[in-house]
Structure formats: structure tokens, C-alpha cells
Length: 242
Length: 242
Image (tube, rainbow over all chains, first blue to last red; front, side, top):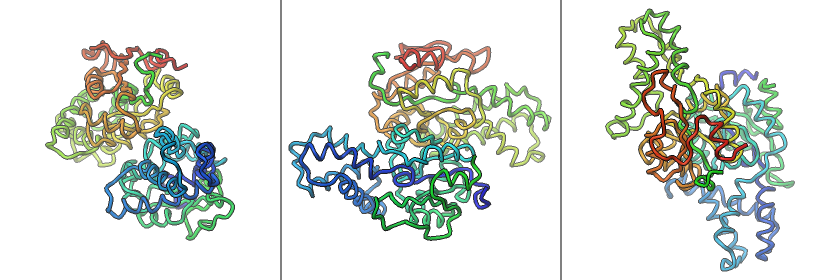
């Protein structure tokens, strides 16, 4: 096993982008909705635009300007913002349709290596989301994609959004370990930078198509993370998990 | 499926007694410790005595007299109380031994029907502990016994001990469901009574040997719970989970 992680007891995972492919999944869910309401935007573009409001919405909570609120609430507000921008006719859209479309974030396919990689990692480490997603969403996503988590940690457990240090620290506390015995697994350098600053170990998974073929960010590891891998199966290999 | 539970989306489980056999497991862990330190008490009696301090310790938190604290902290304090009562020589006992013995609560065997019952129930319902145990303890117990939870809810998520209503209500909120779409599964009538009062559905599992051969409490369902079963496999059967 990689010597930096030999005493790690828990691996916490970023989920959107690192474990599941949100872009294709959101586009798939949006396509029939956009089409039936005559909203003229490419479903993948719609997914990108919806996702682009994610960080700014969390930032209002991180800054303390807004009290803690779960991610599905932010996603729902952002959905309405995107629809407004594209002149959607809200008179013809039902509440049930909006609720259902917001649940697109709970029906995302794992990347092809995710289930096997997690299954192998789980033999040596306790594993769970350390995501900004809410508990119910992480639970549904696990049931949808067969993700074999032991526990769900992250923003809702910590009442704090990454990359705030307390999100990592309270998640470590929830699994009963000091930060240095927790590894953060993510496809995003910003996430790992904050995790490392909080004392966690770091595992970078390269996901160069998370944002589609023209992705510009996180194409490479920005620092010498403890493990750098092309997939969760490669990370399992590198950590000695057969 | 039982008509009372047809729209339930999540089953929350009491764990100590309902899913796992704490008495044998704690006795098994205590036996070598008691023997090596010459503490003259039967290991099963030791388990009973340790467990008997569980409700009073939580009561101090429930009443508001003491701020929220995780169950492993209470268990550790109670362990020292029991050892003191039996004149243990604390000078000869290491901190590591106490830490390890306290983790007996994380290494308890599931009842023989538990893993199969949960596996079948999981095909129709999201499932998770709705226990007074802490998150890390529930996680370790699941890894030890192969309990296939989707999520961990309960006291630590709610920052409140059962049978306080908010323990049930905040757990339901964490899985994104209204109380009437959550079922509480327990071998304890008091737990189900509180769950029902909070609006949850109720499943009673009879565990007449949880406290050993002379058990006096919870031998029968005290009310007409929505489901009454002799095991988790029978509950799965009764709920139509093949």
C-alpha cells in the first residue's frame, strides 16, 4: 500500500464528477422536459448552465450570509433561475415536474470504473461520500447506481459546504477518526487542497470529461497528491486493494 | 405488501437488540479482560450491568441537563463505573485496553436472520440504523456484521436520543421523507410507541432473548403495530420483499 495512506481508516469521496457523471445524467433527465415545454436549449448546455450556479449558491451559505440549507434546496432555486433565463412558461410547468427534474441529481450513472473501484477499496477502508450533496440525495444516488457506501458524511452532517475546513473535520469526527487517518478522494484540485490544509490525506482521480470534451479545469493534478490515478480501480490498485 | 406501509420509502432500525446481539458480543469481548484483571463477575452479568447504565446516561442528555454527547462517550463513562463497582485495579488497566473494550459495541454479531432480512428489505425500501448509537459505531458494526445499510440516521444525525420525538423527525428529514413515509423497526415497544406518536409507521420484531433466557420485557407486542414479526426475514416476507 502507498505508504502515505497506511494508517487511513476512512476514504471520503467527492461524488458529483468523481464517482458519478452528472452532466450526461442531468441532460438525459432534462431532455424530455425541455422538449415538451419548448425550451430552446441543448440538454447538455442546460446541465452545464444549471451546474454553473452551484458554487455561487453555496458561497452565500459559506459566507454566513444565508443560514445552512441543503443542496436540493439550492438546486431547485437554481433550476428556476435557469428556466427563467430561457423564458420558460411557468404557467405550463407543474410543481411535480420541477420536483422530478430536481431529482435528476439523484439518478446519475456512476463512471464505468466506480462500482468496481469502490467495492475493492471497501475491502480495506470504510468508504462514504464526503460530498456537498445532502444525505437523502446521496442515499438515492447510491441506490440508483449501486454505490456500496458504509456511511454518508459531508456537507449535511457537517452543516457546512466544502471547501470550508469544518466540512472535512466534522466528517472525520463523525467516522471517529483524526483528520490524518481520513483520505479525501476527488477529481477537483480545490477540494484536495482544502482537505490537505485540514490535515487529510489526498487521492486525485483524473476525470477529464466531467465537463464534456472541452473541459479546461482539473485536467491534471495541481499538486503532488498522495495518490494520483486515472480511475477508482487504478486508485484501488495503487492502494493495494485487490 | 402490508397496506399500512405501501407508501413507506425508508425503514429505520433500532440496532442494539433488534439487529445485533449485544449481550453475547459484549460478554465475549469482556471475558479475557475480566479474567486477566481478576475481576470477579460473569461476563454476561457484566454485559447486563454495563447495559443497565445506558438509559440513565442518555436520560441526562435527553433532559437537557447535559449537552449532546455521542454514545461512545457515555459507554466509556459507564464502563468505568461498572469496573469501579467491582473494585477493578485501574493502575493495572491501560487506556488502550479501555478503548478496546469500549469498542465491543462495534463488534456484535447480527442475529441469524438479520443480514438476509435486511438484504431482502433493501430491495423495496431504503434502510438504515435509526439507533441511539453514534455514526462511527454504526459504521463499524455494519462492516463487522455485513449489514447492508443505505445510510446511517439516528441520534447523532438528530443530536437527540430516542425516544425524544426529534430523533425520529430529524432522521425522517435527513432521508427526505415525511414521518408517515418512514417505518421504525424495533424490538422495543417504547421505541415504537414514540415513533408512532411522531407519525412514523411501526414494525415490531420479537427478540425474546435479547436480555438472555430470563428476559421479562418486550416479550410481546404491546400495541397493534403495523407489522409484528418473529424475525427480520419474517418482516420482509410480511412486507412482500422476496
